[in-house]
Length: 283
Image (cartoon, rainbow, N blue to C red; front, side):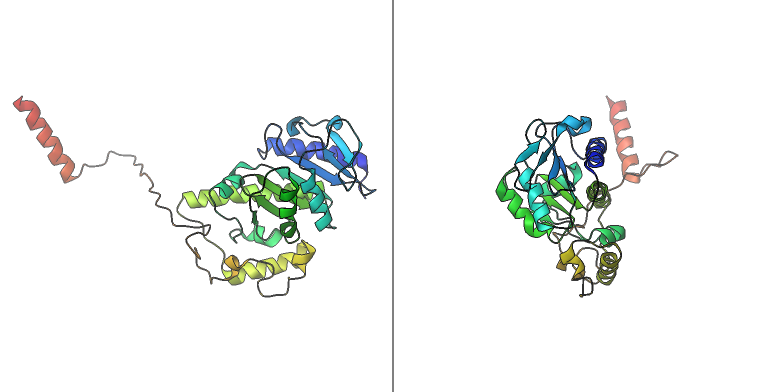
């Protein structure tokens, strides 16, 4: 068990890292970790995660009642409690607002696809939870079926939630989600994002669940065809875009050409220039 003093230091460190890595701004987001006695250490409401201090952390019980600390626990504590209730293996939760990941939900583009091998291997896919009002029990309850099966999820127009057996692991998963969003967006901007071959995606995910673990419900599917991957990942044999609403729709992007020497004008351009010269001489 990690002692409270060390967990306090970790929440402060990773709260600041979330800010420095542009995963949240201002008073956004919240972090929590399980203490050895089963109570929960969490950030208080209304504090800037980039400038966290020890006084910004409070201790609550598993029902959300404050036990120690100044101020009130984060207004989204119900979300954290739901994660701990659904995942006995979870020891830390980070909720942040990674901008590119949120943009995917606003654009109605799912990140529950198999694009990057290392992400499929270690994280699987990242589903989007339908919209619910922030800070409500309804939002917390809507998360439950998703966090049973996934270590990181997006919430429609709101943000991301990452779970881990440590604060570091939760942070790494959050960072991976945003990094994946950036790579995928860049690929889409360049013309389209290839998706992994279905067989390779299933192989990677099965291997990853056995090697690195994951949600118990997902690990139990490691030897099943497709492991815990969604149909969108395993229902296509290597095509780059299973359906128009997928992560890789064809882009109409056109790239400019830069040359080191002047380009010769086309015959049409030469004719237009000649006509312009004649008109100028005749006036």
